[in-house]
Image 1 (tube, one colour):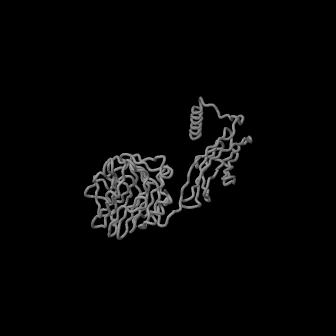
Image 2 (image 1 turned 60 degrees about the vertical axis):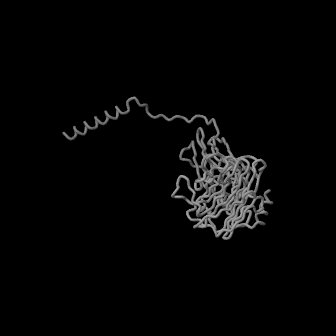
Image 3 (image 1 turned 90 degrees about the vertical axis):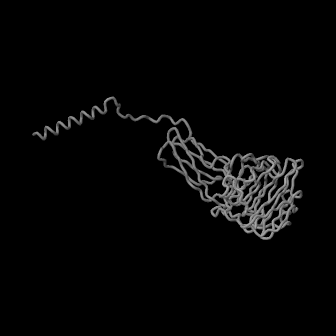
Amino acid sequence: MKTIKYISACLLLLMACLTACYEGIDPLTPVAPGADGAAPVIKINYPSEGTLIRVKEDVTSLSIELEVTDDIELQTVSVSLDGKEIAAFGSFKDYRRAVEAFTYSQLGNGVHTLTVAANDLSGKTSSASVRFEKVQPYKPVYGNEQFYMPFDGDFMEMVSIGYAAKTGNPGFADGGKKGKAFAGAPDSYLTFPAQDAEGGVNLLQPEFSALFWYKLNASPDRAGILVISPEDAANPEAMNNRLSGFRFFREGSATKQTFKLNAGNGEAESWFDGGDAASLYPANAGWVHIAFTISASSCVIYFNGEAVCRGDFSGIDWNDCSVLSVGSGAPRFTGWSHLSDQSLIDELRIFDKALAQQEILSIFNAEK
């Protein structure tokens, strides 16, 4: 009997608690969804309008991300590329919202149109499209070409499809030798790995050539232009170790700038200074094609395909060299204040051989 009384008391207490919990709360009442007043809304998150896709391969994969919403309920979502359906969705976790991401694996070169179409349960439809381009991979134009930066609005290196790192605020100038040009700025320059196995970059070869178009700004009166130099543990704040790598730079005055090359063989440095023949005069300096070559026997500097400085050399050493600097001696060649160059540089190419004069003249004539 006591047990029955105890169970009854517990039941009464539970009922009292349940009643208290639901006091002031209305029971759930179904609400009609209402009229379907709007067509689905589509947002294509990637690719976006004008996206440029650059990779080494002629055929690559494309990650597609989209979002579709409706005021009542979605029925289907279809994705087409250049008029051909590549994906369709008809089941959604949230019946008013679809967030989809998938990969299309056969994207070829050219301009493409991605279209997303959606239907809701009432039969309303909508669609949205974006145009983008899978840019044809750069194919080296010249034999032994390992590196090419056209500076046409970005700092991409076209052979490896890699981007240079920026320090400061280097920019671009209209009216380059071809399209835009690199425009130097105070305390600004680019760096690029001299070796990158994953990216397929190796500029540290027994022979080396660099060619570029150059439009002189003589202020400041000295500057680094292209440098692959080693670290200098003895002078970390003003590096100036010249026993390996190379340093191509200019120095002089507001009326005359002389271009010089310094290179190290691992034990000693060699200087290549052409004096007046390797000088430009700001008063009448337009675009000049500059090249220098390094081989196991000599180094040569060229202006517009003509040798302006030549000397014997026993071969370059690359010990502790890891960074190419463009537009400055920094960070590895700063001990003599050959810092940022405010000149214009365009069509920079690097080769893994010492080009002969005729090869340099051929490139100069093709680009002038």
